[in-house]
Image: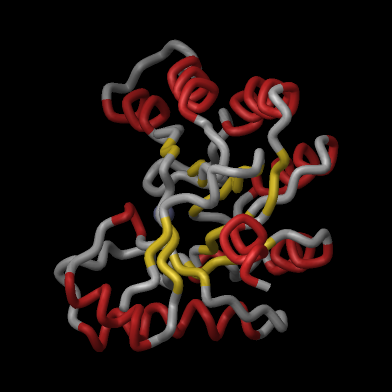
Length: 217
Ligand SMILES: [Zn+2]
């Protein structure tokens, strides 16, 4: 009944990199970086953040990446009314529609959901995209902010985790913006350590739709 996805087929050496919470200043750098590796990816867009960053949305579209809906407000959905959830998801769709973008891919903010939100997604015919390789790339920037640390943010943990846990069909979760923190300045240094190694291992970087639904075509 519910269209819930955590990973793709284990048979092919393909993986889907996803970025949540953009667009942001960092998104442009992420796009430059992905291009170098001929890597496709999927961007789960925080609708409210589009205003003033329309050019970034245009660029993601033009360069052939995929979009997903990550709600308009990015509010966690487990205790919200169905009415709020429907409006919040549709508002993000409306913003994307302005660019001619239609997507049935959806990701819950913070991966938080309840029964009502599952029903809402079913009603709106959304495919709920989770990830079986959650890098937690937000954690160290968040700890630095919370404890007012002076030293640079450590990036070894998300790198190690990604390199050891990525398997055929994995959906990888990263961020091109960090809620409550701001620009994710470590995302490129993290990507620089991850992408070449995964490529070396023979993985192909595809969009969510290619990973999950291509074989069904
Ligand atoms: Zn998010």
